[in-house]
Picture (cartoon, helix red, strand yellow):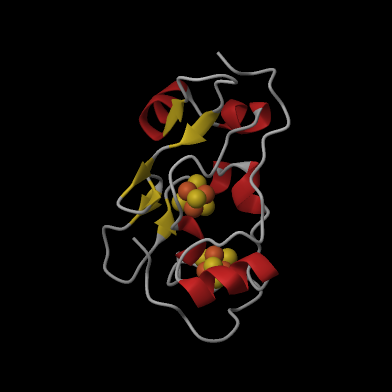
Length: 126
Ligand code: SF4
Ligand code: SF4
């Protein structure tokens, strides 16, 4: 499920992100967790927000619901806050407001393909 596109560039300081949330709308198994990402989350967060794929190489991904990351707080209409912003994964940190990926997400209404979320570290898989 996408959101409607948004015209124009956002505040490069991120001031428009909570009102946008387009880059947090994406297909399942999009945001993988590297070892550092897993270390920032506690056991309860890992259990509630992520899943380890059942097939090799057993990567861990953030869970997905209704077309967006399960950590996206959609409780307030028009607001799209990340519930784990301070400890969000590395992949999320690569999507900076005003970057090509951000502009693509705003144009499409969901995350596009201009950024690859590719896990390179396999040391922390269970
Ligand atoms: S698409 Fe851009 S403006 Fe929208 S939430 Fe993501 S980084 Fe922020
Ligand atoms: S962890 Fe936060 S920033 Fe990353 S996709 Fe989920 S809601 Fe968006």
